[in-house]
Image (cartoon, rainbow, N blue to C red; front, top):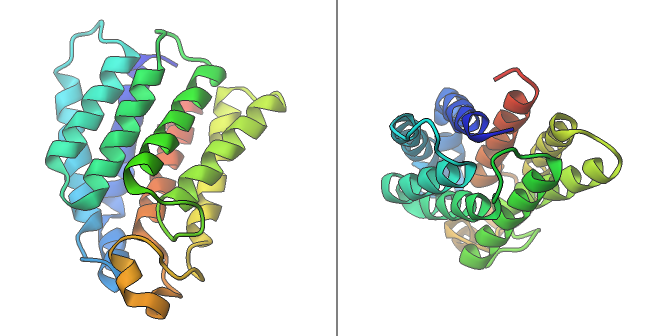
Length: 210
């Protein structure tokens, strides 16, 4: 995996989020402020445009930190800051041009740490952390069991989807949804849902499908 593959990841994430923007926004309307899908779709689309302007010899670190900065500036709400932090921290962890499973695992761990540092959320709070933390753990477990980068990414994507679905019975303890108290139970967290899409995009690209 290299800088071009990371650009392809952001592009694929933009495609998946745009295709699902209406559902994500409806999920957010139920327990948040109702703009998550369209906001994130707009931010990712802008990130793709900005990445297209990078020089051909841009490093993996430049790709992800640039995408992260763009999301912070172009995506409204908390999701822009959180996803922007995740990508910037992941990018800073990548100090090589050719990324193997070990390096990508380190980047994903840094992304999770960045989200938790900024959002102060833990697993069980009904946030994107419920999807991302499972994805990171699954990626590392698969890698230690001998999976290659694509295999570990597939495991991460499946775990992220499971983590997102696991938010449905949870009562929110962070963010705007927490104001609803028990009424937040029974709803899929929109941030966890979009995190699952972004991890699916990673699996698509590393598997040659994106």
